[in-house]
Image (cartoon, rainbow, N blue to C red; front, top):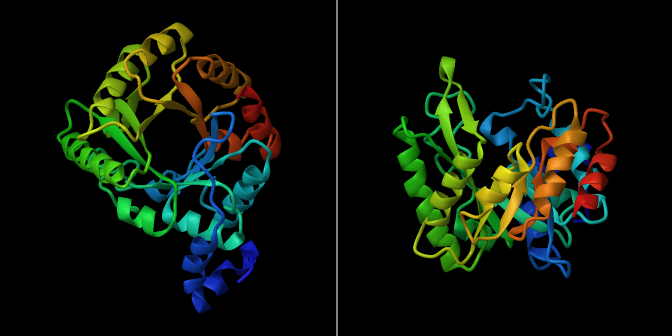
Amino acid sequence: MTAVRIADLPAVRSHHPEAIAEAAARRARRPLLGPGGRLMIVAADHPARGALGVGPRRLAMANRADLLERLCIALSRPGVDGVLASADVLDDLLLLGALEQKVVIGSMNRGGLQGAAFELDDRFTGPRAHDLVRRGFDAGKLLLRIAYDDPGSLATLEAAARAVDEMAARRLPVFVEPFVSRRADGGRVVNDLSGEAVATALAIASGLGATSAYTWLKVPVTEDPEEMEAAMGATTLPVVLLGGDVGARPEDVYERWGAALRLPSVRGLVAGRALLYPPDGDVAGAVDAAVGLL
């Protein structure tokens, strides 16, 4: 089959489910790092964790056709290396022909649903290491939130260590996204983005598993550039920056990204909502601005 239109996805999935595996098998691949040694990845794994909001819009990512259109625009822009997403989104993008010569990163644990009592027991409900190999994908990503007062974090920590081992055994990069977290009033999980907390999370994540040879770290940017530089000193592992939601003033966030991208261990940027749902609606412009920072 050739690439299909977004409107045709339900019909193709109904009548030709094998088309997804066929598209994965013939996909043209590329190395993780290009000649410049930098990575620009667009993230779209939020919906699988029930996190559909962008700023005040609680269901912004709930419209799958709209999300896919935005992703296709982002992936078509010069300098964008690939995508990080859950299996269903990657299946759609395969059918749309949007993943040719792109880095494809599967989101491995999406069980910590946003707002759930079990949110910090983030089970691995997505692709496993051998699934990523079978589908010809290039890397995996796992979320690791560590709350010292929540026993669920221990189960996630142990599962993350085993996933690091399984990825390393197959020589597949794994991007670990670590946070020191806590439950605020009402039980909502809040990530601590202070320099001390980021450094602590990096140190813990760097020590997962039997080897860190294939481990990358996906790190939030602190508001204070000096704190960010000090936190990066906690590890020698390669780092990509976590984009997050830019809010009403994206220029402030872009300035912090630009400063952090100059740090020696930082190899690139992984951003989702900030690029796919910019305040002015210009996906191409937001992506191009982020690429320019690299």
